[in-house]
Image (cartoon, rainbow, N blue to C red; front, top):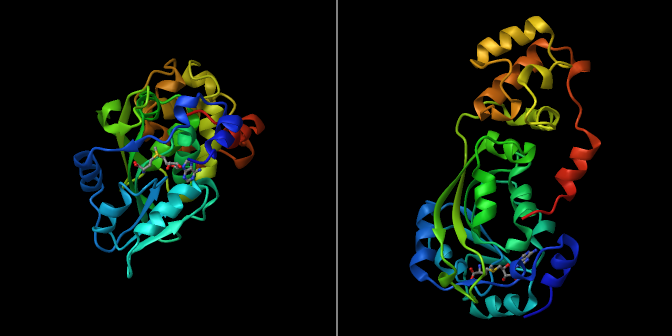
Length: 290
Ligand SMILES: C[S@@+](CC[C@H](N)C(=O)[O-])C[C@H]1O[C@@H](n2cnc3c(N)ncnc32)[C@H](O)[C@@H]1O
């Protein structure tokens, strides 16, 4: 295999275990992933890190078009050699993080490269205006737990979960891959919320509020937001949210965060709205945790 993972290892500082190409070898599991994604004959589906096509080819039997994204030239050649005339598979021989995502609704079914899990999720979920509908992903189990934990104290993950439901479907043993990874994996299902608490066009304002509010998740609610809401506004908010004013702000649920943002947009003068802090901007862009 080519050494393209060296780049990720260098840039992201991940352990070699996460840069290996662990191919799925359990056909039953692959079919379960595709079933879970509920692919329709009109769907465009992305396979991020297509490898030799273990997911790509069965996926192509269900979808209108499959974009097989793979940046290892060896696998690209392998994939291309398997394509038949009239295929609905389009090979994209690029780094997924540099790919222009489709402008029309699409889904994803993938066993992704673990070394860039957070950047991949970020590309798919940071902007709710990206027309992702559903994703079924195999990812490292620890990352899956982090993305689905409650309460949510990471502002970026909170933002993802304002517009998308993320759940762990099952744990996947290392036995289902070749070579075996040293960690457990998980199947994660992501679906766009039908009725998000905040309209997608407010996502930047929400990101700023979440970064501000969660800069110290243990802070009591009233103290964390004292610079935004006046005392009477705070009293009304606490009532509307059904919480104690001393509750840590990090314990709020997605729906409550939605109420909070809408109250701010409606009742607080814009000059008191939090701006995206420079640090948080950098963290959002540069944090390369799995
Ligand atoms: C875990 S393997 C999965 C392969 C295949 N989907 C399977 O399940 O057998 C991840 C694949 O992602 C590819 N990959 C790694 N980084 C990538 C990137 N930035 N963009 C596109 N593909 C990448 C690797 O070359 C590898 O083939």
